[in-house]
Length: 141
Image (cartoon, rainbow, N blue to C red; front, side, top):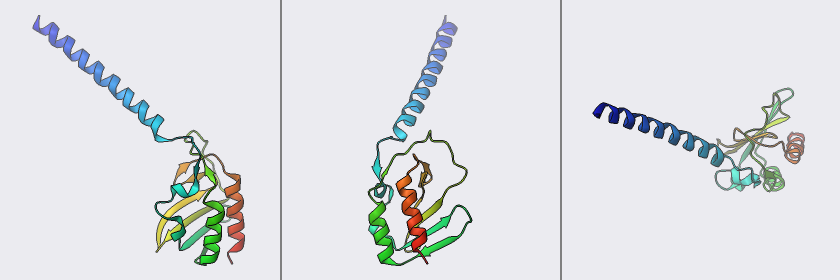
């Protein structure tokens, strides 16, 4: 009789662990990424107006340009900071991008983005952001 009770208890415990593991996994996937639009500046850790350097790389030929021109940086940030970004982990991976933009504060990388990725998280493609990246690339001498 004890053998049967021990066996039943073991099976019940194992089943409970399996089911609770599935529930936790399901909840974390749903809570991890909200598809609510957020302004670009909310992805920046801190005050986005404190950016002191921007590096932009062309995805077509790998050419890098860097600017520390505060007037240009602040003007560009003013244009992009309120662009709505929607994270989407189900978005297909892209094989190439138009530009890679990295924002720095005192030499420390603070934000990385492409028109389809922000801080290495996939997002719905953002054509307005792509247009602003093109404008920035052309403005840096």
